[in-house]
Length: 170
Image 1 (cartoon, rainbow, N blue to C red):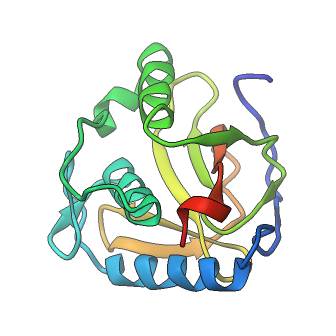
Image 2 (cartoon, helix red, strand yellow; image 1 turned 90 degrees about the vertical axis):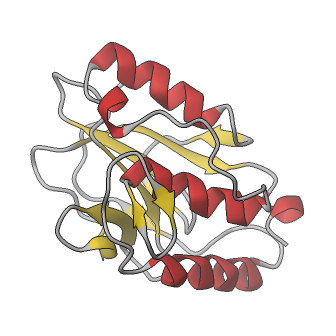
């Protein structure tokens, strides 16, 4: 699998697992409960503050029903160079059973990490429950949703789907 994938249009599809409707509804409830949480680096507390990786990992913790204690996460800064981005991405992925994606078809709950081609990953987000949406943090609005089409200067650095959704997202 190549390290980077440059593509600007992606396909969103409904979740493909047992009881997908209930799992999508649960994802919707969790994402909406984070909406408007202000941006603050190195944090992950719903309603108070979160950075992009803290937000995404907190959503996954809820979906997997992991304790909501602050686990040791890579910080936003650790995604800024190519070498540290690879390490930080691996650190996030080893906390959650996952399947690497080919980066063209996404389902609700999939995780995408973005970056420019000559640097590391600079942003993490999660695919939304509504068609062609992603949830992420911005410095101005905090946790919010936006469209799935990415700006020309962004590429997908890594993408993964949580494995065993049938067992873990109940």
